[in-house]
Amino acid sequence: MASKENQNIKKVVDDLDEMSADENERLEAYKRKLAVWDYNVSIADATERGKAEGLEEGRKEGSEKSKLEIAKNLKQKGMDIDTIAEVTGVSKEEIEKL
Image 1 (tube, rainbow, N blue to C red):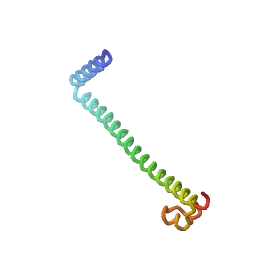
Image 2 (cartoon, one colour):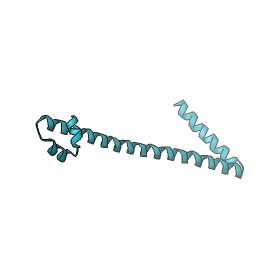
Image 3 (cartoon, one colour):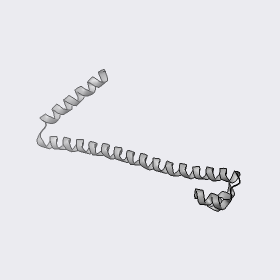
Image 4 (tube, rainbow, N blue to C red):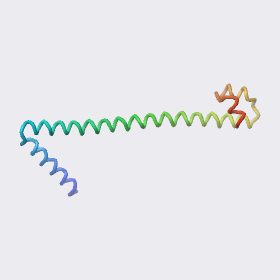
């Protein structure tokens, strides 16, 4: 709690220093704040895009693995390769390797 209070006190002191500074110093302080905000927004945006891309890639890989597992099971059950390829979308060559 003391740490949080110290942070709040520091923020108040920083804000008071900023208000009492001359116009150029206030402008520079404002620019620094904007730069920090911009950086934080950029990082958050990049993180969200990375998560979305990772999820999509995972779905594609999972889907492909599922197709191969299904093809393998159908082959083990004795279904002909042409039908397996048609149903699963897995190439005949890959099915023969299973």
